Structures are given as C-alpha cells and as structure tokens.
Amino acid sequence: MKKRIAVIYGGRSPEHDVSVVTSLQALQALDRTKFDPFPVYIATDGRWFIGDALKERANYLPSRAVEATLTEVTLDMHADAGRKKGVLLKKKKGLFGGSAVADEFDAAFFGFHGLVGEDGNMQGLMEVAGIPYTGMRTLASSVFMDKVATKHYLRSLGIPCLPFTVLKRPESGYLIPKKEIEALMKDIGYPAIIKPSHLGSSIGVAKVKDAEELIACLPAVFQYDDAAIVEPFVQNLVEYNVAVSKLFGDMRTSAAERPKTTAELLDFKQKYLSGGNGKTGTKDGGTKSSAAISEGMLSLTRELNPDLPKETEANIRKWAVTLFDAIDGTGAPRIDFIGNSKTGEIWMNEVNPCPGSFGYFLWEAAEKPVLFTNYLTLLVEEAFAENKKRAIPADPVPVDARLHKRHN
Image: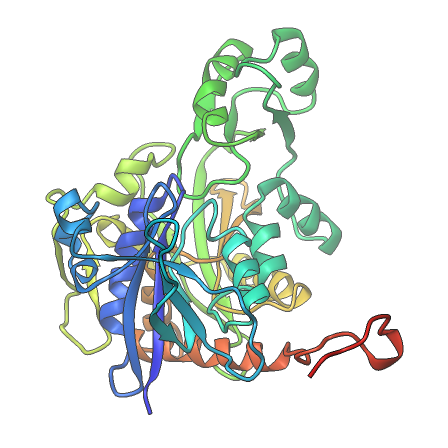
C-alpha cells in the first residue's frame, strides 16, 4: 500500500511564503507510485488546514473564500506505539464540538524555512507524538538555526569561521546605547555585517560602516529575533554552497555552487523573487526529475560545479562532512561558505537544515546525480528508518523504576 505523506509547511515564520513554494515543489515531485501525499498548511497565525485548494499556488495566501473550502485541523499528540501514524483531528466547533478524525498519515514531510519549523520546534512536536518526519533531527535543527550556537560548534570541531559578537534585544525597545555597542565591537571593527541569529535567507542582513549605522539596523533585526550576530565584512567576497547527506548509503557531498551577485549581499527579494512574474514553470530539460519550480529561488544566477582551487574544494567538502558526522546528521542540509577571492581564505558561514527547493539541483548536478523524485523518496525512507531506530516502549518506565501501579 502507498504511504500517506503529509507535506507540512508555512507557519509563523518570516520565511513563510518561501516555505509554501518549496513545499508545493515537493508535493508535485513525490513519487505517486509509492506515496499518497497531501498538503498540510500552517497559516501565519498558527492555524492548520487541509484541503485540495492548497495544492494550487494561486490560492496563497488563502482568502476567506478559499479558507471556507478547507478543513481546519489539529495534530493528535497521542503517541500510540502500536499505531505509529499521525492523526489530524477536525478542530472543535463550539463547547460541545467533537474531535472527529480528518485524516491520517504515515510520515510528515517538512518544507519549513526559518523560525517555528526549521529550528527544531516542529521536529520536537513529531518526536513527542512518535511520528516519522523528514530532515534533520531536533538537536541538529536547533543548533544550526542558531548562528551563534553554530559558531561555537564549528570552533569545537576546528572548522574555520569568522569572529563574531552578539547583540541581545533589550528588555524594552530595540536600541542599544552607543557606548555598549562600541565595547562589543572592539574586536570586530568596521565595516561589518549584522544579521539575525535565528533567521535564514537574507532577512535583516545589512552591511554597516560604523556604530551609528549598526544602531540604525537594530530595529529591523529585533523585530523578528531576540539576538543579532555581527561579523567582520569580508573583502573580495565569494560564496560557495554544498549539501551533505548519508541518504545514499554513504556519506556524500553534492555539487558545489557559487552564487553570482551584482551587489555585495543579496537581499530577500533579489534572492527569492528575481524571476519577475512569480509564476511557476518547469526546469529546463523537462525530465521527470523536475517539479514545478519557482522562478525566484532558481532564477538566481548561480554557477554549478565552479572551477575551484583543489585545496579550497577539498576543505569545503571535508568540513561539511566533519560537521554533519559530528552531529549524527540526517536529511541533506546545505552548508554555506564565504571567502576572500584574493587571499584564498575560506570560512564556514552557516547551515541550512532545510535549504530552499531542498537543494535538489545540487544533487542533480552531483558527481553521482540523483533525480529530484528519487531524492525525495530517500528523505521519506530515512524518516521511517530514524523513527524506528529511536522508538521506545509504549510504557517507557523500566519495571524496576515504576513507583505507581499499572492498569490494563
């Protein structure tokens, strides 16, 4: 029988809209001979919905008319060891409303980006409910969606990263006194890059030349995050990205990519909406590997398999594997590096537990190419394997540790 797969996405994240795009790609590309996928959309206010209208990108964000065709649901948190399924319950209507089952699923396929989804929160929810889910586990998701925690982790492994300082959001307001800023920036200097500690994409990222500019940028960061990380600006900036995974039976890195930019930094709209009209299309070539893809994320000009110095490429792949192996990684995170093209220096910058479009184009262009549909199948299969590996008894309390009587 086909496995019922809930593709869950959206949520209370500044990257909500990008999550929708990524997840609709997966919904279309999942292998229908093995799986029966359906969308589970979490609105920006946290409500969960299911319904056929969610399969069409033109219906986002759902209007009241579209919402009227959907079913609002909640997740049953009963971790039934015998059932091993996820259950979506119709939301109660009124004081005496029932809790009828709206749908069931065998595994959750996550397409979240950013806060409250990619950062360990949804992963933890599925762990509590005992439901298989795709991607990185709770710990890895939490660590790598926190840029400060990631820095400490990199340092412990001896992986090069830029020096940094952390600015915490004040208890009231968004501004930090200049004298305090100057003390924190003493060892960083200017120009510098400020960015939110817990967001992905390029939301809230800015280059600043002095303390005044840094202070002026704080409200944009603190509106979404309680911490900002500040690093030295890298001259002659060049970026390299590579994904890493053990989905294929061995530890493997993907094709490398070098994003091409006309500015020193990509802003959010340039990165995700540069395709112009925002309509969906199909990837050039028309093979079965390609889902309908956004003209945003993939229209960003990039060079796949760029000509890299041998030592640079070797280090990028080695450090990616070292990091992934150290945290017992799952899924296929994309790891981003930045460097100085003139000096040859290279640093690991950040980790994306769930990269945009799942980074499938990196695997299609890898030394051993993996088609998008096959790649998604491996993610689902890993979800079941990880769930089985981490299973605990229905009554997790050892017999010798039981202090209260059990009732059959």
